[in-house]
Amino acid sequence: MRPRIAVLLPAAADAASGGAERYAAGLPRALDELGLDTELIRRGCEDATVEAILGDYLGFYDLDLRQFDGVISTKAPSYVARHANHVCHLMHTMRAFYDRFDEAFPDATPDRIEQRRTIQALDSAALAPSRLRGLFAVGQEGVDRLQAFNQRTARALRHPSSLDGLHTGRFRHLLLPGRLHRRKRVDLAIAAMARVRADVELVITGAGEDDQRLRALATGETRIRFAGHVGDAELRQLYADALAVLFLPQREDLGLVTLEAFGSGKPVITCSDAGEPARLVQDGRSGFVCPPDPAAIAARIDLLAADPERAAALGAAGAASIRPITWPHVATTLATALGFAPAAR
Image (cartoon, rainbow, N blue to C red; front, side, top):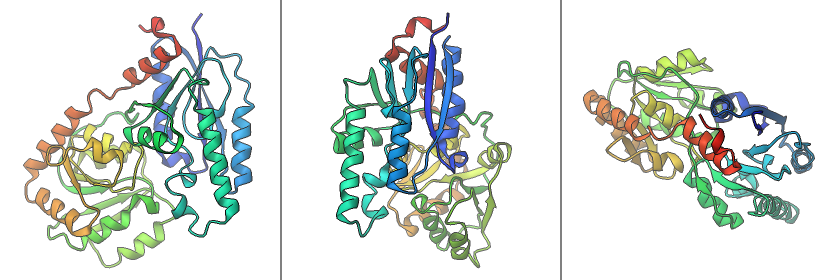
């Protein structure tokens, strides 16, 4: 009889636009291919109030998982779940109560500060070695954050995207895919385009709360096109025909955009404070890691626009650099931590 594994993944209201959906498609399939009977358990989460957040913690804590032989938790607060054979592959904690606290609550009251302490204490307890058979984070960014805030030691275990069929086409436009959220710093790309001399188009995909603000910022710039939400087939082709991919977030835990761009043989332009993307991109070898400054970004764009052959060479180096990041490797590592390595085929 095949061991039964539960993969716990909180489902936010905008989950369809994030990397969690790529994870949900990729990991269970890879575990099944190892000979494990995998069930993805989604539970809706609401982060509008602290009371709702604590209710979500309680919801995962109260899950009855006794029918499973092993459990893999992911992002907050799924790791509070109780099981004797439990591994956490952490996407991220609730960062509004961690490194983004000042940004989320600029006028924090004493009650809010106490709520931050409570959530960090809950996380530290849930991620204690006594509760887990293994603690992994999806990148070194998360490893470092766990050590700094929770005094927990984790291993970095990057996972790929499940967007298949990626390929290299022409080198025509710039692409900036993802959510239109302030932390993705699409405004930085728009400001950079005002300084770009080359006649190259920037295609921005995705939706989000910053949509209208960003469109207003780009008013009058004919080289910027907002494509809105695009399906996988269109996204795949946009990657294929990109000259380069811009990915300019702040302190990203992983950033599948970088991996998808490299999978399409495209160089990535990112920033030194981008988090894991700045570790994935080798400056001058698979793309550029530059200061979060519009002029610096524009200079790299002009460099690649003037030399598409260099863009192709950088993209090829990026593709080679991510070959070790595979779903079989992730699944085997997590299954081994759960004690099920002999089931691998």
